[in-house]
Length: 144
Image (tube, rainbow, N blue to C red; front, side):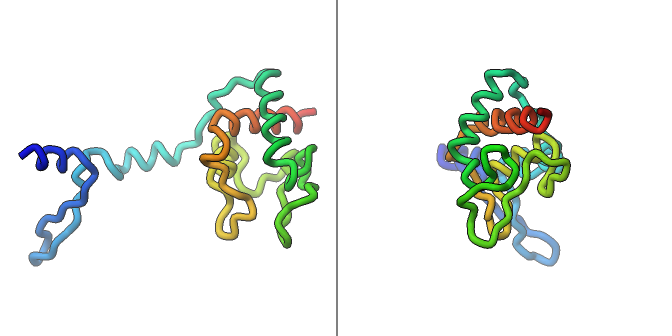
């Protein structure tokens, strides 16, 4: 019976009999895929890293290492090694094509821009803190 308890504690997909005797999948794990979970995931995320000289400096360092080749060191979209046929975004102008809030920008950096992914997904290659620091760097750069 221990295996049954372990199975119930996982996110295994079970079936139950629905209308007209059809098998209908049911999520076994409580809270998975609820409307509340989806709503929380869709809400814009605030930058948890306070704007500071240290954060801007850290963001500049990470941006210079990973982002400048496409976006240019001034973040104006004039990088020298962008994928052929792509137009890297100007990250210091007034128009943001893929979101403008810190949370939206975080998502773009972390997950990339589909469908062609000319903007790579950086999840797993740089930390979330690095992404937030990049956002602080871009905000500071645009303000000056």
